[in-house]
Length: 155
Image (cartoon, rainbow, N blue to C red):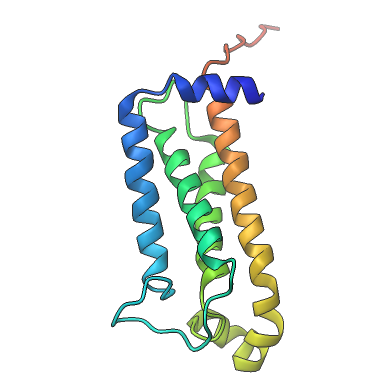
């Protein structure tokens, strides 16, 4: 599978690499600004980012870019289940690197003490799950690009 994955990536046209880079940069900025990983005047954090937040965001953004590039001039028939897992993984990345007490959804569900007690310890797991789902979807899409379709047997 690894050799198929690597050989399929080497066969990508320049257009896919450009899409991967642009989407990765866009995904990074879209998540980093509201989570204040890129300091800005519009958003703030009550709790400083963890040591792993930037790395998790960089990895998930890069994987999101690669995954989106697989949909450009794709030989695959349809998006399949990887489309849903890619979107879910990108949303998980936002929750993983965000400030636990700045997120309104978390505050409404758990309150301030609940966000710190229950949600903050789960954030590294959310980051790992996000990266794992993105990696699974990417590996599945890229490794299937040159697979032969087996015709359905008629009964």
